[in-house]
Image 1 (cartoon, rainbow, N blue to C red):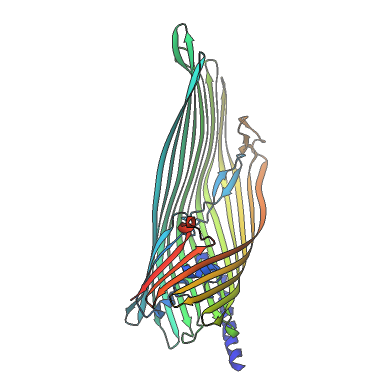
Image 2 (cartoon, rainbow, N blue to C red):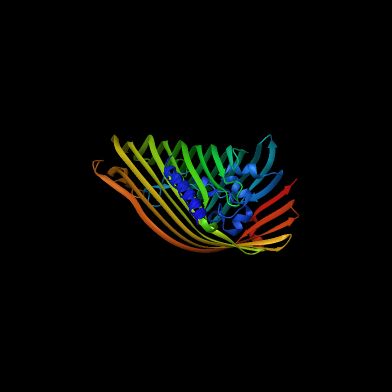
Length: 549
């Protein structure tokens, strides 16, 4: 009884220390990098609870010292994605300004991974890890159609589409660890990643309308309509990090550990959109009789160094129950450069109208976020060949964005001989708050059927709650009816607050599965199938193949 109290006291002290520093200044630290085996058993919900060397090595660099044989692991996995965190300002279908997030993912293409651990130099042990993918696709399409309506007219259209999609990602890190004292191991990890994504679409549509004339006989261009639609989104991220880890009670079956890390991620994100409509009408002599030019263009660029601070830890409670806690905080001040441009030009032989609205700002925004993760679970050896794990996993994250800028307007209107010009500067405020709450109840089973074959399965019941609160406060005359081409409002004196407050609940039941093939203690192959065993799902599999020398 005294031994149980002593261990419980040490664990409570350890968790008190962890809780005290969890709120100081990366979600990634709490999630780690699960192996194919851990993915099959439940993924993030059980990582750190179930012993798995490859997963534990990513969670804590001190585990590098526990590998006494050189091992190489070659893996393939769909990348979970790297979200830039900073949203960009765009327009919805009603031409209202809204914030949107660009989710940067390689899910369809996958990444390749090599891990080498068990390298020795004196009392130090090292582990190297590298992951990469490179994918690009350019496509151009041209569709031509013709319609005849003799003897009056005929028309032809040219629809040209150009799409470019490019993903490049690489990651590298080095872990080093050594014993300090009789039952402690200290470790350090250094590394980083680079992620680049470009998503570009260009569509040009030309419609030629020709008329037939009998006297004099000929075919003449009567009307030309051109529609241009361009969108592009470019994201570049460069991250470097350092992580420190400590293992205690290394002589026992359930060592405790704690990690702390700091990272810097440089984000450069650019968004652009163009909607352009041009109408030209010709006379029989080939000269333009009337002309209409309408364009809507906006761009947004955001840059920042995002700093993340994290701490995680695990301890063993009485009766072999494992408790995992983690917290992270991230912050940055980012530069924003935004332009919204609208122009309508109409001309004929009798009159000319030219209306232009341009709003822009260049300022700084503030981003803050924190997350907390809790896992608790226990592994029970039902038989020598059957292990069962049950537990609880909770994850909470909240982020804030604030921008206090000055919006600069330029408005000009020309109708015949009349001319109006207006330039104005007005405060512009944006607030965005995003909250995520996940609660998992995982159940995992590992069955070693033979000496060379094992199977894994995981069952999860997940509850998810999300809330997004967004407020955008802008001058009244910043809004106008797109189709009527009229400026509305009260000259900028009033305000038009816009925003959303949305809440969503979701309940998910999911089963995962995988297998392991091994030959002796040297050759292993783990495969994660997810929830689908059909051949179409092979691109979503996670594969870990390793050889121990």
